[in-house]
Image (cartoon, rainbow, N blue to C red; front, side, top):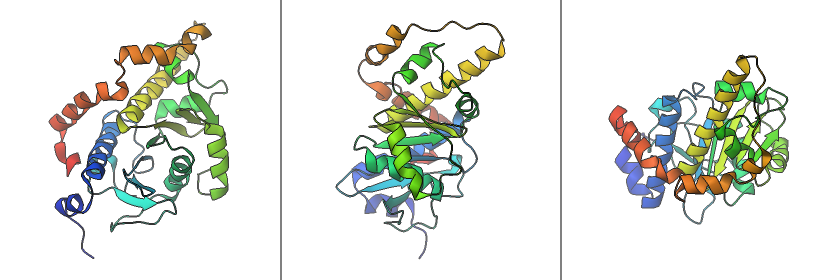
Length: 255
């Protein structure tokens, strides 16, 4: 079978799915822009709108700055492609993402990166520390999962789900970061905040002096503070600006 063109894919899916594809492809390009990518080896996924249990993942072997709306691979919970694609998916990506999507109805977008500062903090016994404004949003909804090797085994899924619980920030020990959200813009904003908190922590600790910790009472009200700052729009407040940035750099993510 020949490869489908952008028009072929767009004409074969609903307008809602196409918009999800465009937004997810944009997120991949933004991960590259912020230098959080790990060549071809991490994954951002999004549930396809509609009654079917399908979600979109990156084509395995494609660099993040090559990903387009039409190249994303649509699979079911068994990891089977439900539309033609010349690409396969990463088995490890399917293990982690399918587990979270299956367990959480609100997990419309699941973003996982191997960012350098995120991994550095994930290897620290205390994990994320309350030392920055960014950290309060993370700590208000943070879970941890111990490293079990490359996530290839289905028997790890129940432990991933158990450890995540109802949290939206998920630190995989010695491995990387995950954000879970109801929208792609929120998942990206949360990932930006998560990696920023880790970057600040790594730099602050490099100074070798005692750090000030934020009052737990401030952390407890972080979600209310976030709603005020974003005017109740969450990631949707910054998302149009991020897309404009991508359009200036390279609008081919929309293809």
